[in-house]
Image (tube, rainbow, N blue to C red):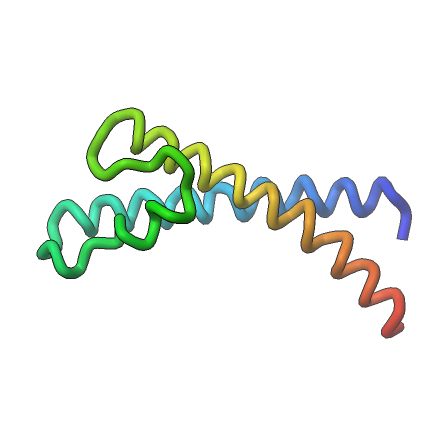
Length: 90
């Protein structure tokens, strides 16, 4: 597979996964604002998103930025692995 095809796939998956994780993050924040305390998701987000603090502007932004970065990280890591293993299997 050509490097340009891998690069294009990384960009496609980066722009797919990042908004997906960002929307998921927003939904979890909204859910946490209406759900009872024992059902809040911020306890799960805090260790995964550096700088995240529940219901602070800087914490909200840190979580949003972290979500986007994780989407690109997954694309950069998973796409070349997929091409590598699909080439070996095919």
